[in-house]
Length: 134
Length: 217
Length: 141
View 1: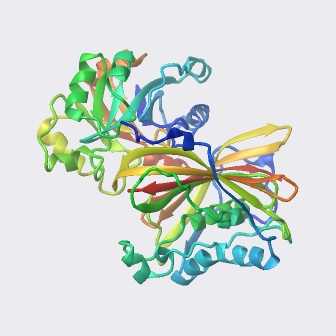
View 2: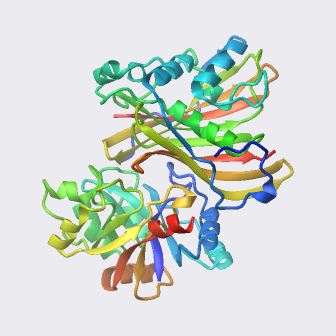
């Protein structure tokens, strides 16, 4: 049968973090390390948003899914570009929990959804991160 | 008639392929991928309400549906899913009892066939190394488009030992992988009942279009 | 070979192959990315730390694979805007091994918001093992 857990945690917010303003150095360092280019001067490269880690990385009331495993995948919907000086807010919720089997055995998956907005309340990104536990 | 018997649309959580985009791709690639239809075998689910007849008419391709479930002998494709089968087995259960599933599905009008049997952990071959062989297996997926090097190759020994028939499927999770491996049937198939019947009683073989695709690119 | 001028929507067709990136990431590059991307887990820092976690050696963060997909899009379609990027991490990507990053256009559509293409993306080993697969929605310039 499917994993048993309190389904009320689906959609529940477990973290809201406001980050310091994006600096030009952060944007440059990330672009160089990722080998991605940015669209224009003063604009970060697209996947810059994945480095936004909130104060709480996991919800506190998570069911026991096993030992942490690996990042299993990500889906990012991009909104307005991130610019140097932007103050970003990331709100994270539990999007889904499920189980499946693969080459490495039985795995449980946790999908977290993070919505990122800027200081003008414009949506910058929605990131669905899938984490695998076993 | 050539059908891709193992495909996933965006209804499967790890696929990113809309059904209609699959069909458009097959239309465009007709010269290298002579596929007459696909069977959507979504992971661990069955939605009786889904209807693709409109798309069938629009694109002139057969669209059938099945499911890929997970058992104690690896993954299994079920064709001919009906209300009885869906009520009897919880498709979200990743530990379905294969020896119970296969004959029960057959009694209820469907057919359950092990897929990617050469794959570690979730393929039949590895389970046969330590467990008794399953009763009632008619065919196995000898050619799976998502398998890694060596995984398809180790299936032949099981086919030879147990006399299983062989079929093929792309196991596509991306649009551009639809139809890369498929099954060629000697007879025409028009619906899922016909598919179940031909898988059980008909003549068919896996076909591999990957080299043709590379040459045609 | 990467493009240098914007690609016109009318010039892109379903089946259009993106330019191909061929590269080998060094351990230092991977470590540097992990630090900058705030992913300081031992598995990304070096072989010894990764083996303590039961891994065969240092691994490349999935986020860096996504960045490489983003780079592929940017080099294939200069001036375009990435609207959506998704990836499934199917296996361990290791530094020191040649990687091939490629893609193909699978759909194109227009709306009031612009001209868009959909792409399938693959990151694979030199032997053809597909370690990361993904898709992207791109608005052409």
